[in-house]
Length: 356
Ligand code: COI
Image (tube, rainbow, N blue to C red; front, top):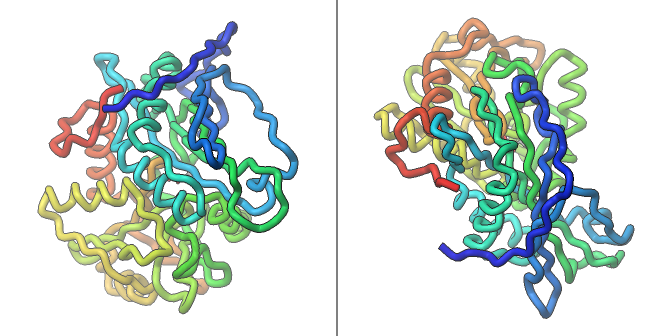
């Protein structure tokens, strides 16, 4: 494993830690951050760990105008015997470079970026909450910083990593959420940026999410951008259904994010010999399964929430209730197994966890 030589400046003061029993997702940040600049012609240079602080950018920095930026999200867990575990961080680094490629941003050395991430976590290790259901959320991201208003790829970039102690993503926690099927707005289209982890996808999702929220729903179910018929994602998560004993999830088609939790769930189900299929799923098929009583479970998957069960789907004024609005047996088992592997309380037969 390659090690990045980083200049470290430690903070002279330490912030007060929040109450680890009452964390609100993504609102509190640790004492330090990692910064690494890229300049055309020079490449990546001057990696630093410095005290967490605001950054200064030229108002013409291209990220502000044309949204050339990508991000990742992963979690570090504190085990009962005080080890620090990361979950499949190599997959995040690979996806970061796939997103970079789509946004015409420079690739980063995955091993060196991972080395930076581990060094930062080691420095801010006491910020990892040990409380059940909590973790340290790790947010690597890259922004275009060249001051230039012409539409073209930036010549210069900044890669940063910040850390945030987190609890549950949704206030509902692992309790099922109500979801409205979105028939007007779309999240992504084939050939667009739907499978890249880039800010624009999230910005354009806000309108539909807000309308759903005003109507008493936690999030929206996204349909495909062409026919508005085939299911793609739920909120900012991938989606799974259990229909008549079989688990189905939309196949990757270029507009769906290649979730690492999604991939892990599929691998876990195969390991358990539970039938799991990646294919196109229409909203009519879900409605029919609901009418026939074969729609057994539905849940979203993502790093932030891990598993988020769906208790109700609203489509064209019809409320489709899933499993009486309660968490399904398989959803609960997947949540327990995956979080157990992640926080070191369950064996890891796949070698997914990486020690810091
Ligand atoms: C995730 O589920 O991990 C996400 O991508 C949500 C994140 C944008 C907070």
